[in-house]
Image 1 (cartoon, rainbow, N blue to C red):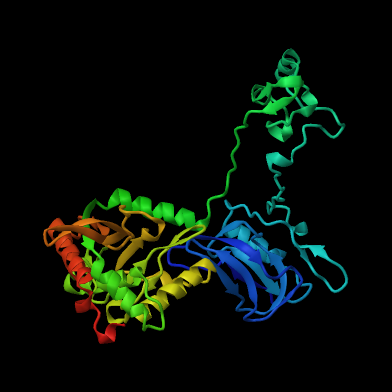
Image 2 (image 1 turned 60 degrees about the horizontal axis):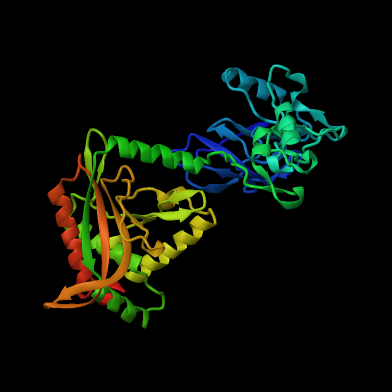
Length: 425
């Protein structure tokens, strides 16, 4: 009997998914555990394996298209089985929803037949590829030049050879701006000045989620910001010494994660979350580290960061960065953070403010380490300085609480020997 494979809910905030790629086509046999499709969620693109077996009879969501969670992704069954009744039944459940599936053929032992043929009430839209403006010709199918009357008249007045023009209008039509953007130079040759152009890209599921979550955070959480300057001379020397003996190279961000985790242990009120009716103070410390990817931003979580060594933190951070780049992060990798760090120091940013990653009460923005003149023991010398800015949700954290946390963080980073014991590396 045919079974419906539904669009899975692959993250806690996912409401719809986009089929990034189909690994099977109609007529293929599918076994339990076979890779069926890549699904783009609001967090990442994830591989979706089939839990059912059978022949792929119907594809409900075409590649590159979005569909709500629990809608028909595909139908599996016996070869030649008629699934039109299943499709019709689903259509009745959601009468207002129009499927965007292209008609797929069911492979029969004798001949192929279209599933949708017996179901005219199911609206199916055939996707039509849209060519970019750069591929349009300025001539129609009969070889006649496509040009507006005004543009033609202007070209004649200016003595411009219209056959040398490339149109920027619909379907490559030459319009007024194409004439305006040309100027004559010696010998009557035309030279382009510059053409206004743009391209529209669909908003990815990840970018939609980022926009929604951060807009809610910025406009509902009363942010305030605390900035502090930290002397990083001893941390710079400590890192150099550690990396001469450690098998795994330690980054400054790894040290910051460790220092933040230890500071949160001393200030549990900062390790909190706003949940509406209650404020949750977590006894565990899970640090989210913002990782930039092509589509946006992911925040994998280093769990129990205060209990881990620098090497463990470094290995986890590198593993998460690689998985994020390859779109292999799983929901368990990015859920459960109690505090977040966003570091742009490696991009040459000295100082910035970050938007709180809900439901966290705080996020720490970390700038780069900069060598500047400093005064020590009454003398001006060269020193390594780093600025950090703590964004706080005033519903949870007050100014004095946030300031006390930063003082502890400053003390930890300026005295790494107290923070990095023998069992911390």
